[in-house]
Structures are given as C-alpha cells and as structure tokens.
Length: 178
Image 1 (cartoon, helix red, strand yellow):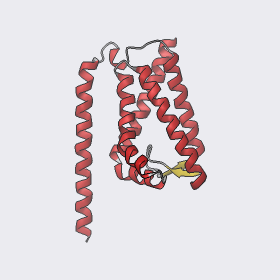
Image 2 (tube, helix red, strand yellow; image 1 turned 90 degrees about the vertical axis):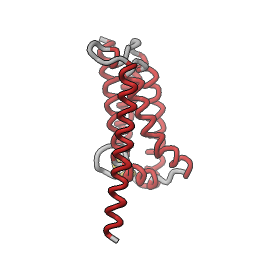
Image 3 (spheres, helix red, strand yellow; image 1 turned 180 degrees about the horizontal axis):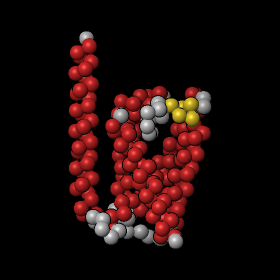
C-alpha cells in the first residue's frame, strides 16, 4: 500500500511540476510579467526567470528517473520559496497576487495558492517517507533512465526552439503594426 501511495504522490508531483514548467516556457512573456509584478529584487527576478522552470523540470526528471526522494526534496524547497513569495505578495497586492504558474489567469487568490502548495508539500512528504522507488522509468514497460535523458534533452531543445520562433513571430507582428 505504501508503494502505491508513494507512487501516486510522485506522479501528482511530477505532473504538477511538468505542467507548471511547461506553462512558464510556453507563456514566457506572462511568466516574466508576473515576476516583474511581484517586485522581487532584480537579481532574484533574473535568476527566477529561467531558474524556476529549470528547477521544476529537474523535479520531474528526478522523480521520473528513480531519484524520487531527491525530486520530492527539491519540490519541497521550491514550494517553500513559492509560499514565501505568495505571503510577501499578499502584503503588497492584497488577496489576488500575480501568478505565472498555470492556465490563463494572471492573478490568483493567494489563499488558494497556499492551499495548493500545502497539498503538494504533503505529496512530497509522502514520497520522502515512502519506500525507495525505481521511479516512473523503472516501472515495467517504461524506458530506463538512459533512454529518458536524451528524450528530455530533445524535449527541452524543441521547447527552446518553439519559444524562439514564438518570440520572432511576436516581434514580426509588432513590426508590422508600426
């Protein structure tokens, strides 16, 4: 039973962090604008701009390749940092704070975001106290880590290329409007 619970918690963590990271890459301008609206110090904003999506991808990769406990620990660290930012933003922005996490909303209710973070932290804790797991890649029928890393790198390359093309397209549209 602990195996299944830990696996389910890991899948929830990996899925959530994959979605969050992908949203930041796909909607990069919105992510950048949300960071700017949070009024974080310049060096923190600069580091978070690319560092947060990379850290979220690292959580997904760790959970997927057999280092689930390391991925869960990374998720806890990110969730703690995100929660501190939410608390800080709540003081200056009120109940609705800037968010570049998921979906289309540019602001979200801070309380809901904190509850979400607490639920994800609980998932991370379940993985941390659960049995060692070979990761999603170690399951029968799944590719092993040696096959996942090249696929992940290709995925990152495709995402980066899509982001560049999207930015070029946006710049071309702005130039045509002038």
